[in-house]
Image (cartoon, rainbow, N blue to C red; front, side, top):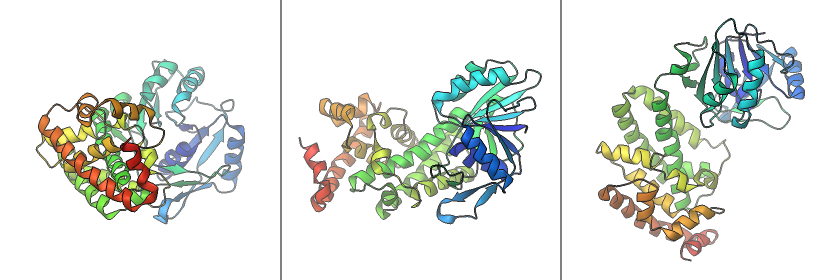
Length: 379
């Protein structure tokens, strides 16, 4: 068996993690409970592997060829050094229990979880509970898709998997595409204020301008101009606050922009705008960077506009949010949910709120399909 193994041969495991390792010629062993999938992978490797194709044909397809595939019953972990766990958050505990039974006790084993769940490393570490096993966690930025029953993966061309370096006590993987990041909590804030904030700009302003398709909203010239303004100011304050290298942060933001403006990824405004009461939280993707930018005395108009647009959001199946809007004024929501205390900043958001109301009404009047936005709001 390989010294590097991947638990879970799904879209993330075989389409992202295996690709990053394959680009550095690191052989891997897939371990999966799905016997049919394992058989398909075994058959594919005997015929030259399976392909990773890239959205928008931004690069030539890549074949994954240096791998083995086994079931849990067939897996031999005796030589494993680095283990990636790419399963859903609900399955982490079960995976940990299985690993506790199979992992060696005579040498260090390093594990990186590849699931954007709440505290995945902690869940897995508690289940494994072995002194020689160190468990870290990564944030997965790369979108991957696959047709049902096919091994081939369609993927973004995202170049790295970033993981919490402090949890692996200085261990650095062989492949430089697997990047250790110190002060990972700050990195998660960086991701929230760069990626998630940009997504909120697109989703909520897209709603105001009447868009349903996410990529169409992201490629609207008006929204793109605002998005770029937000990237510029957010990059600046994040570098000032956390001492990030400006060029590194610029690359990080550009990867985010490329992801959200891609016309090859099918998504909706509604999916990205859902649960505004969560996204307006005091440390979340809108209010967090809004307060940071404001505290650095930089232009926070785009984020104030995004907060105002979220306050106006009235999507389908949002009963909890509708009740909040019914029982609270916009200012009360900004204070109680958004954690805003500075009246001057609240006034900035409310000024944008009243401007966007007029824009929203004009779009609804010109588009019969969107008149229901006004009807719901005026009830």
